[in-house]
Length: 351
Image (tube, rainbow, N blue to C red):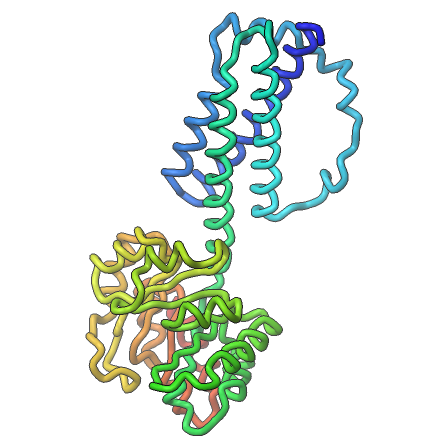
């Protein structure tokens, strides 16, 4: 292969890598506000693409874009609309492929300008990890963003003899955006079956299904999320064990706990108790003011919890809640569907 041809291949793949990395960098910076990922991608782009004047002069001089036979080659699906996660994957693959080409070209004796193949190999392997983090953040952000409005908690202890599916169906028809299964009973007999049926019901209706406490159950049924309390599995540990698209929530009562939860990888935070609650009589009441304070120090969605009903849902909405978690106000009502509608109406009015 002639030197001029090698330079053209190097130039094309440096451009391809730089373009892809810049797009990923912009997504990390502007779509996710992730400073760490942004810096990693920016540093990688500069290390790969940047060169001295002589380096760039030789490459640009070899360029022949007008006669490139690849210009008119159509790529299947290239012109179609794509969601952000697909854009992340396709551009990461594009960069990885370009880096592999550059690595191999750098190994050919006599190639000028001289390049270090190990630099491209390291960048490629680093990008595998960055791609995973970026995709995970985007997928989880989209799910967490759906936690607006009513986040209904079906507590096995509060059903009063009614079935989980029966009540869940009513609440979903009432407008709930998420259903959490909370099971504090000593026996877990039949819990996996219940969770699977609730997951299926939620999926059919476009509603998020979240499991409280039980990581194994959440994984077994492919839940949309797991919710933890302060005495449960540490958030950072759970985040490492969960699939990249499963969201993780955490209950907090203080600013310190909220910051730690976000730092550990929580995708949303439940702040409470807002008011005295029949569902957990020993709960610490922190009030809407704590919600306002937490809103100022974290960037993930906030769900207000504890003693919320149609009379006070508007107050927590005004305090900055993205959603409201409700148990008693719905499960103790004669008509769970209508109770759900009333809470949602009050919450939206408060927004």
